[in-house]
Structure formats: structure tokens, C-alpha cells
Image 1 (tube, rainbow, N blue to C red):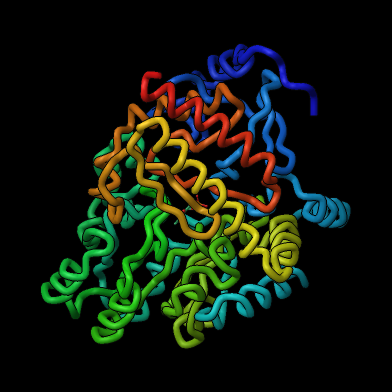
Image 2: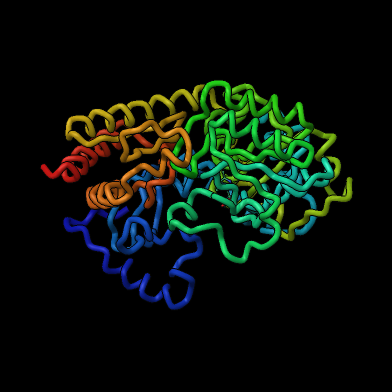
Length: 436
Ligand SMILES: *Cc1c(COP(=O)(O)O)cnc(C)c1O
């Protein structure tokens, strides 16, 4: 990596964006990358190593985006690079089964308490889409319950009151999503009364409840005590499937995800992000009795030319091996606690009101004074303040997600010195916001 330049310049990123906007919608291949809610030009990233990324103008940042979740080991870890090199020499895609798919499936089933059988796909979106189809087929019912502000990928039936980019852009439910979404009921997260009510109204029609057990797409939100247990109880009672979308929390919060941490077993689980070691993968799995309905064992069709891709699977295996070491999650949590504690102190010293939600290696700094427990309370945040905070950090070489409604991720590559540098930048940023 080259030395950081003295002045914060983004000329090359701006020139690349000027080329990109004519070629791709908004100049990007995924909306959240466009800096729409924080303003300014997105940075084009040229390189990533450990806790750092370097942009096209050679500015270096301590990165808390982590590619939106996958990079639990940091950027370009040596173990993943070495495994990829070996695999690429052997070929990149065969359209036939490979040994490493068996290995990764064994690792997933071994780690995630509720998964007895698993299918690999190419993205989190494919995982949730397929899990919902399977739940409908298994139950013979149509309706799906989700929670406001939870994002489950850009699946038609799940793009209702979705978080992440949809929330960032302030979009209503997406146009182009037709009749499919009339079967989707969205209720507030952490609201047991709303849950009871939706089952009173629609009980025998609900195929599945899909939930981010630890929502990350309205910013990080924690499940209230007993909420996930209540969810398990009511779905069981009505023979509705419970789907945990652990695309973020799987292998991130603990090896077995949120279901291991909170000891609640869903019927189906969706994975993505960390499980691909930085390459495109998704997975869905669950009880054998349900999974055996998937083709070719059963009638529910779901396929993929590149599913279980040898390169992606190799990266996933290498990453999951690297985080199988004892105390990985303890170390991550300790680092995160150090950072979050420092951020709270810095905000308070500057007289800036924030609420910081944090669990494991996930956290979000909400610019609000009321506790954030669902989408409605997340939306009380001052997003203009977040934008100022984001840009002030960026100028000091710290890269947070370009939206209030997203989660920061700490990786194993972040050092104590990274954390002190981040806190120094945060003190400046909070003071700037407070106007001192
Ligand atoms: C990122 C995400 C998805 C979608 O995964 P993609 O790989 O982007 O399709 C689904 N669910 C949750 C909870 C996510 O955070």
C-alpha cells in the first residue's frame, strides 16, 4: 500500500463516477453504494488489505463497511487468497458436483443448530426467495409475515417495508412488484401484540414468518427479551414455518448465528455474506422433512448454473476454517465493545445525543435520543447529522456505511491502534457536529 496523501482528494473517484452514471443506473451495481443519503460522490475502491481500503485517489481508510458484512477476517486474508489460488489453477466452474461442496455443506450443518440439510445458491436474495417458495409448498399456504425495516434481499414478495437501500432512498414499496406482495404482511419488529394480532386475523393462511433475528438493515437492532421465543411459540402453534434470515448474523454473531446465541431454533435458515468468505454465495437449509421437498428430491424447483461454484465454495471453506478457532467471537466482541464505549464517551463529551446499538461485532450510531428497537424508532434519527458525521469520518480516514440505516462491522483485522485512530476521528466528527 502506498503512503497516504496529505490532502483529501477524490478527483479520480469523481471522474470514474462521471463515466459510470451514463453506463449503469445511478452509476452503481447496487443502490446502497451510491452515497444518495449522505451526498457526495461514492469512492471507487482500488484495494483492500486487513482493516484498510484504498480508493482510486490513494486515500486510505479504516473500513467498517466490510463489504456490507462478509469480511469478518478483514480484506483479502492470506488464508482465503491461498485457497483461491489453488482452486483457480484447477478450474472455476464445472456444472457438476465437487468435493468442496460436500465439505462446506458439512461445515454449515455442523455449525448451525437448526440446519439438517442445506442447498447452496449464489446470493442472500436467492436464499430467501427459495426459502419462501419452499415454505409455501410445505404448508400449502400463501401468506408471509415479515417485519418493518427488515431486508431480505430484493425478492418481490419481500420488498414490502424493507430496510437497507429501500429505507436509505426513502422509497415506498418498489414499483414493478405486482400481485405477489398482496400476500405479504409487514408488522413492527419487537412488537408481540402486533404478532398476536396478525395470527388472529390470518392464522391458517400464514405459510411463514421471516425475520432477521438480529436486524441489521434498519441499523443494528436487538431482539427484545423473549421476542424470538414468542415468535417460535406462536409459529409452532399455528403450524407456520419460522424462517431466520441469518444472511448477516450467520457465522457473524456466533458460529451458529443468532439461533445459537438466543437458543431459538427456526424451521428454515438463510445464509450469505460471511459464509462466502467474500465471494458470492448464499445458502438455505433446515429440517430434513422440509428440505427433502426441494428438487430433485422433491417437487419444489430451484436451480443455479453457478450454484456451489468451486471458487466461491473454496473461499467460504477457508474463511469458516479461519473463524473456527476458539475465542474468535470473544475477541471480536471485545474490540467492538472498546470502540462502542469510546464512541459513546466521545459523543457525550461533545454533547451530541446518540443511541448506539451493538451486539457481537455489529453496531450502529443512531443520531437520536430515544431507544432504537424497531424501524419506527430508527427513523427518529437525524439522517442529516449522520451524513455530516459520515463525511467528517471519511475525511479523517474512517469509512462507515453511507447510510444511517446500516450496520458497522468490526473484523478480526481491526487492531487496537485502528480503534484509537477511529476514536480520535470520531471525537473530531462529533465536535464538528456540535459546532465547537
Ligand atoms: C444482504 C442481505 C440479504 C441479501 O443478500 P444478497 O447477497 O445481497 O442478495 C438478505 N437478507 C439479509 C438479512 C441481508 O442482510
